[in-house]
Length: 380
Image 1 (spheres, rainbow, N blue to C red):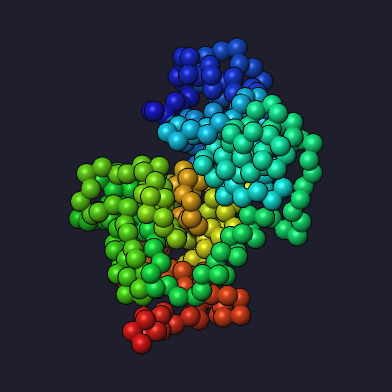
Image 2 (image 1 turned 45 degrees about the horizontal axis):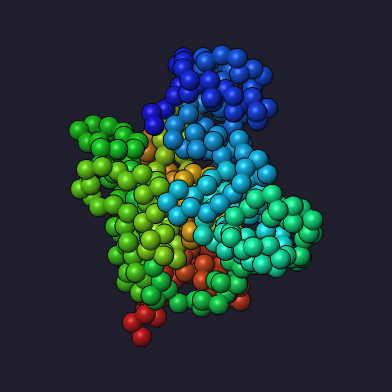
C-alpha cells in the first residue's frame, strides 16, 4: 500500500484513527482527516513498536496497527498455512505458553505451525481435543493454570542451548547476507563532485566482500540480491528467502543518512519490542557486530537497538541489521569510500560471527580475534 500521510482523508484514515483511539493514543475518532494530532499519535505508536518513526502509515506501520487492535480472547485463533493470523493476541498466547514450558519459537505475534503445535501439546495435556486452535475452552484452561518454568526465559534458555550444542566451527553453516535496497531503490544518495555515492552500491560491495571471506571460512553464503537487480526485494521477501534456506544467521547491511551532516557512527538492530520481547541470540549478534566494528574502525558507537522491522520480525534465525556510518557525514563518507576501511568492517563482522559460536570459556576480547586464523584453521 502507498503511505498515508498528514493532510489525507478517507475511510482508511477513519480506521487508523479508530485504532489509535482504542490504543489510547488519540482522543477522538470522529473524523476522517489525517491531521497533526494523528501524525503525532502515529509517531508515538511507531516509537513504542520499534518501527521507523516518520508519522506516516505505510505497509509496516499498518500491519503493526492492525495487530495492535487484538487482545487475547477477542477472537478464535486458528492456524492457516497460507494466511497465518497476526496480532497482539497471538503474541500474548505465545508468551503464556512459553511461561508454561511449551516451545512456540519466537513470540512474534504470528500464529505459525510451531505455535499451533504448542497449543496442541497443551490441549492434549489438559484433556482437550488437540486441534491446534485457541478458542474459549483452550483459553479458559490457559487462564486456570499457572507458570511452570522457572530460572529464566524459556526461549532464551532454548536459543542459548542450541548454540552451545552446535560447536565453534563455522564450516557448513549457512548465512544470508542482505545488501540493503537495490534496483531503482538506491537508498541514501550523496553527490560528490562528478561522482555519486549510493547506499545500494556500498552495501552490495560490503556484502560481496563478506560473502567471499565467509565462504573462505567454510560457510555457505547466500545474498538476497545481485548487483544488477531491476527491483529491490521487499523485507518480507528477504526474510522469506532466509527462512526457506533455513539459514543459521542473517546479516543485513546498510548505511545511513541524515539532514544534519554531523550525524555519524554505526548502529546495530535486532528484533525486540518495548515490553521486553526479544530475539536473544539476535541481540547477542548485534552487540558483537557493533563492538567489533567500533573497536577495529574507531567509528562512533550509536549502540544496539530493538526494532520490529519486518526483516527482523519474520526471520526464524538470529538476524541483525547494521547501519555502517552516515553517507551524509563527511567523516563517515571518507571512510566508506575507502576499500581498506570496508575490509576492516568485513573483518569485524567475521570476528563477530565466529564469536557467536564460541562457548564462554573460548571467547576473546573484542577486537582481538585473528580473522586470518579462522581461514588457517579451515585449511589445516
